[in-house]
Length: 145
Image 1: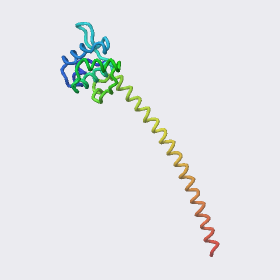
Image 2: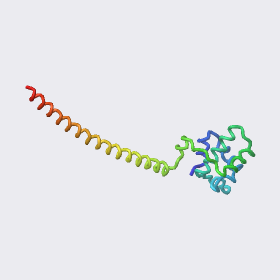
Image 3: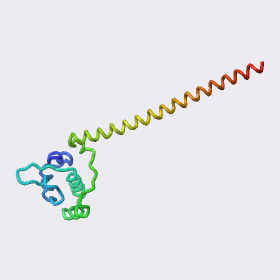
Image 4: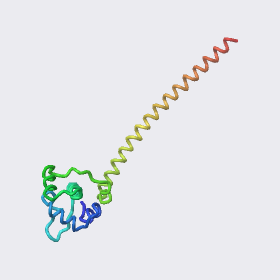
């Protein structure tokens, strides 16, 4: 969950601008983003995606009716969360991302070890073949004399 301050920092606008946009586009946001008076606003990932779209369209000069039409057409914004959102990601999401990366790296390590073992076997076979060829060369040279 994200706070008004988180979104303010993310978009570089005032907290009042975030609150105003939330109120203006409340039908596209969760109840937590537009709570009862006196309660803290909490934005979900989906709310952040909507707010990203609102912010991008607003910055591009779109009017409120046009932004609402766009949101209505897409139901929910399909914007990609920018990398700067990582600063406000909950620790559990950061942990999940780290765990996924660790699993991916473990799989790569396992594949590398398997490839390494195959290469060691091939090297041993090549060395044995070289040794056998050297013996045969030695016998051939001994037969010439």
